[in-house]
Amino acid sequence: MAAIPTYKAHRVAHGDTEEVPEALVPQIAVIQEVLDALGIARLESPGYEADDVIGTLAHQASGAVDIVTGDRDLFQLVDDSRPVRVLYTARGIRNLQIVDEAFVTAKYGIPGRAYADFATLRGDPSDGLPGVSGVGEKTAAALITRFGSLGGLLDALDAGETDGFPAGSRTKLAAARDYLRVAPTVVEVAKDAPLPDADLTLPSKPRDAEALVALADRYGIDGPLNRLLDALAR
Image 1 (tube, rainbow, N blue to C red):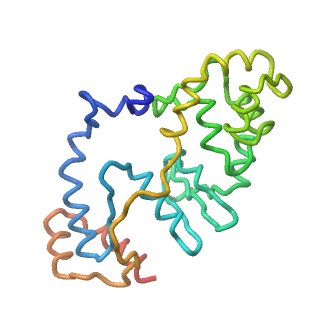
Image 2 (cartoon, one colour):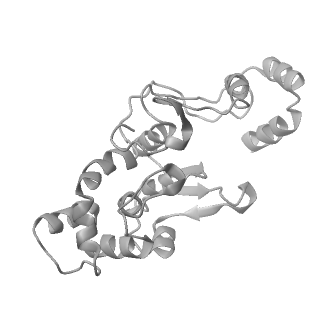
């Protein structure tokens, strides 16, 4: 955030402390207790965001990976060769969109693994990512398609090339050179966050059934817990 002060600034209340909605705070402990009673692993890495933990787990996985999220930032992790997909929840859990490289290409007109570079150029107001002033979605897509990556674009810019730059975009990119130098460190999801060893196997039954019943009675969460247990059993 020091590199791009506006990035996710809408989440920050004072200084560098992320603002957490008041109603969310008591829910976190309950979620942790439920996961522990179920026997579902939960991981965190000091100094890294949840996106980075997800990115690292996806990178380390030896088989197919499905990432369930409503965060477009994680589109950058899709990789048909492994494969890694995103099950995008923006339209609700009953209307999941399966995001693979073909989806990214069809939606944004860019190579399937180029979402991070595309987002850097276009920006993302929802995360306070400014992008390059005057470079919209179509121009960003054209630039990434022409040069293959942000690195390739910057090499062409530094080499003084003029071919392949949509009208007026070269001047705008040159003016944003400092932003483009630091933005990838902010936008790109880490794939090497230090993670503790953990058994990531999903349980077919609760690790501590009595504790789970007590939690269900205490917080009135029988319905969602029963749906979760049914899903795990299947």
